[in-house]
Image 1 (cartoon, rainbow, N blue to C red):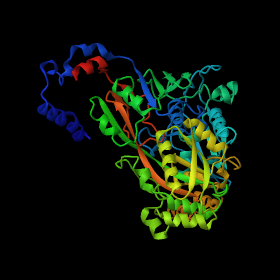
Image 2: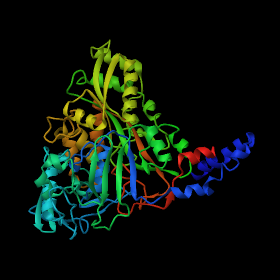
Image 3: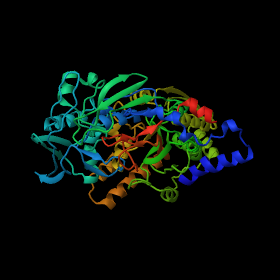
Image 4: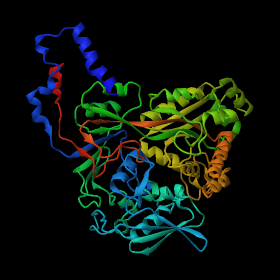
Length: 563
């Protein structure tokens, strides 16, 4: 990147100057860093301004956090017993726990023991004073997380019982054994693993708590202005040390150009970027801007609801699959940080996924074939196609995904009409009012989580025992998922995951599309305080070590005078 930046910032400008000599009035255009007027613009504010690509918050109860803005907030306000090491996921380390869980067998059952750190304080709440976290809070949190009425991730805790052993000790009793690879993620700072404040939630009630969350993290809730921003302040009693920042502001700016201009003007410190071609190279022209490429590589799939006609017909689902052209979706991104996936579990990142070679050998690649798609549709009784009512998100990627879907399906007579909603509303709508087709982009920590949450019958929307994201209403691989979950032999476990996905592709209940890593632009004075390789929280992560280095911001009038 350094050599490319040099080309954009030095070689090309000098070439332009050589070909187009400037007047004396502009002779100092390239020496603006020495301008004394800039010294007055030095910034001492230690509040980091982070612009998100959505129009509002979704859920501030961490056990319902699904959208990226919700996950960002939960990551800063709450903790888990374990945590994905900041910037280095999927590496897991102790967080609220003193060490990693220890395993024993009791009455033939697997039991994981966890000891808590002492002296960890909850934030003050509107109805509660700060108090020390104990095992009571941990038991309360996981009891809540396993309740489908109070958590979006209840399915993750089926067959797991938590018990208080002492004030600082708990144990998890498993009705069926799990390897550490599958158990540890359930108690991390992710999904249902966040520890909530028992006293605050009991005093406020779930609804009010969701509007004023109370946790133990490095930052705490201060103010929420719907449609504008969420303000978090530093938790000076944080157990890992007082944060270097005074706070973080999460600003809702869905317009890409407005986020970009805010970053360039110094009004924003970090922004969610864009996968649009040219976005990164344009930003690289400017001094003071860095762009970090990092995981996790979120996976986009197209899910077909097998319970709704005509999607209940396998010929229709396969016709749609053959009408799709993956390259159109990939072309939305710079291919340096995006690529194809060939199964619901991405083989590039996790054990248990199928590769391109695998699906080709099985004849399950579904390469674009419009003629074949039309023939299948005709065989299913729809020679003239049909119409579908869908729901999409305001996010640029979702809007484009549904546009491409519309264009490709129109070729075989299927006409889609997509209602675009705020991102949080889209999440709610597709979970409460099942649609014939859902395009969904997400990351899960392992193959079991991908398969259980998207394809186990318990996770079927609305009617499932523990509704989650089984948009396909699929019921045919429960036994394979469960067998793999409790298999302790890694090779056998992976084989079972493969078998499950072969069935998914053969029945064409989901069409794997692409993965895309994240590219996050920031001002160069932002120091995250950790390496940025991969983040489960879907943003770079702001911790107690994140800081804003001494810096200056060049006002617009000075920059204009330099041109």
